[in-house]
Figure (cartoon, rainbow, N blue to C red):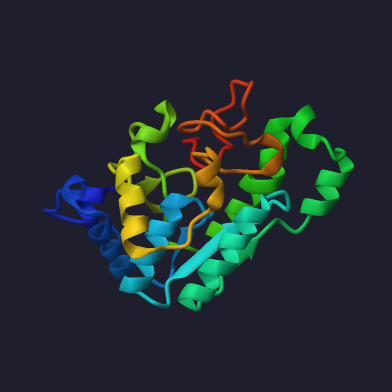
Length: 225
């Protein structure tokens, strides 16, 4: 099995591919063992629209941490209604038991463990059996994402990972949303550039509103390890 993008796509300048072209490549090579990771932020609004136009039967999954904002659940329902899809839900079989064992303020006492229980563990389950996954990562979101490739082998999860919007700017995302009149998370209108769980997300530019007041910048879903 190849893990070299040049072997997977010989003669292709992957960085020159547009977002729809990246999605098309992923669908061609990996559907139906392919899924879009959806956190119902503005980037996923764009990717959902593009992906389902290419392949109406494409798979989409979400990690339900049980502490998402009401606005996130609202746009989740709106997306399913607009596109006639059912988003696959992953939350980990022992989420409730593990979180309860550490108390209701798990995120305050141990943010890393909270993310591991609510997000990292369920992600592993969601990716199990897949050959590729798609994310809404953009290079300008944070320094940890500045080198995100459009398509690359994900060594940590042992499958192909695509970031079709890697070279998009914030204005590009909003222009597409407004042009297509897409449903989006209304927290963005209230200053939340990046939206996670209720207990650790504040308004802010880029990802500065995530885990505000701490050195934490990623939950662990997209760290190379």
